[in-house]
Image (cartoon, rainbow, N blue to C red):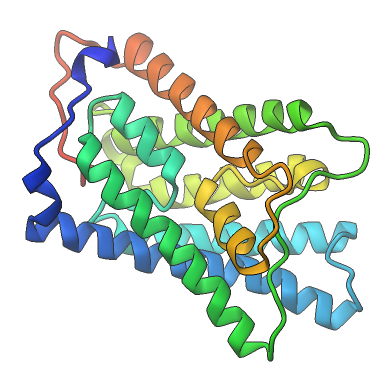
Length: 252
């Protein structure tokens, strides 16, 4: 069971150079991802007079996030594993691939990267704010939680299958693009209902900058639950515990 592989780590790990470099890589990757993803929505609004909630706007958001995540994961993969998502980090922790101490470093770096990206967007656009994630009319908070659980399950399951599984072989080469594609596809599926976050840090940055916290808990609870389920399912069913060797935190 994955629970037997969970490691707290030593507090001294937080000051190790490789851990700090990994956290910095997560910060930069998240900044790249959020700046491009959220910025695309702001640009679409400017060009279409607030038309980002139209079908065309949804497609544009899907493509922008898929492209940006592909790049963000790729550039961080060799340093931090290219998590670019607190939920992905949580899934790695549940599976025993990263310690709790390093997970904390990643979470702080990821959230800071998102906040800084939103602040830079506000500065670059002359004061426009990135809109906080919100539920659409007729969508309840628990409906959105289910959406976030299922979408994040798909994301983290993809991460495990293409990047974590020691039997992945050559499929690991396409891990970043597969991860970007599942996020883009999920945005097409859930974007019209709750914004399709799948990433607590992506929701956190706009919430901080706009200081809007309505139903914000949805975008933490759903992704963390979905991530944990995906990690446990893949570890227990598809990774043979008798041959599985614990991987370092930068393994994907």
